[in-house]
Image 1: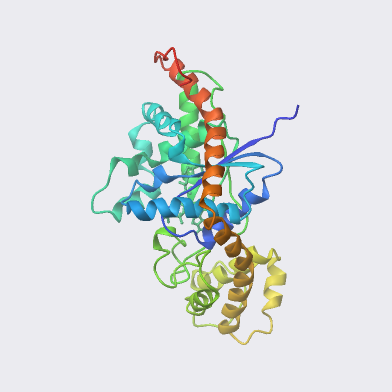
Image 2: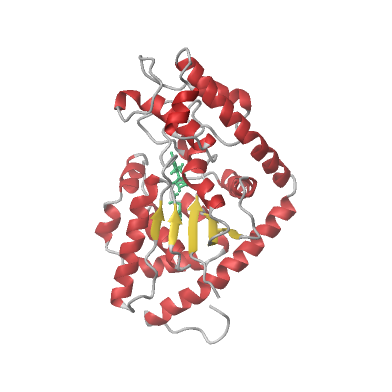
Length: 340
Ligand code: ATP
Ligand code: LTN
């Protein structure tokens, strides 16, 4: 029997999924489905670490699951589920909280950024990476495919796993590896190429390309994209050219072409206007079939619920026994009845 490597990743249902999420994370989830055993999670408990509108969150959770299926996650090959449907994530987080030093969490850059933007900071925002560690560790995941911005959180999950193993039982938790794609790992905002394209800003016009935007909106966002005062269309790490570099990076990630071929495609462009239209066109063509599949799934809510219920069952079958073992190691008395 060959044991496949396990993959775990998550995405928050807070706001509209955008091209950065797709190219930085979801595309790799889809691509790796055949070789690995996959768990993909809509992390609603992570979303409520900042204020959410309940009606909107409920809609976005289901919409995101439909979008992941439309993007190619195949429930026959991968387990797709909603985090709050599998209650062991929250319990595992509590157990890990008790071995995680506070200082580790206070150093997280995402916490510093997000807490600076909140008038009142909930404990959940600080604890966010411990819940993420529970997500990963409860599944004995070897690999965590994420965008660049999540590297620090996966490294923290490794540190927590090592600490737990050291205290309770060597090799109990698998030490997970972040898997960051070579292209598309960090898309920048079209309105500000110095800041990452972000779901929480996706409602700001011209910031992100949302996977559900219509062709007109996509064209408009690209046409308004911030570039520089020059006219050279080439990849560059010069901060001045971050806007052009971002546009070329999007084109490259969507078409799968090499840097040289991408630059060759724009060799005869008359300026940034042509670049923007060229990138918009490939994105529009790429998104059209995905949007049609999404709509079909949203039109059949019973089928979506059925897929998510099966996913939750499959996920619990793996994570519940792991949680039980954790509890046992930590000296908790397990209840005699039931499977928890
Ligand atoms: P928010 O900005 O509200 O925190 P987000 O856009 O970062 O949301 P998440 O749900 O936190 O979205 O991330 C889902 C996945 O998308 C993660 O693997 C993350 O690394 C990846 N990702 C997010 N933003 C980008 C980006 N701009 N470029 C590439 N990958 C990204
Ligand atoms: N914090 C992650 C979402 C996330 C996740 C995970 C990613 C929650 N749990 C487990 C990988 C593995 C983010 O993408 N912002």
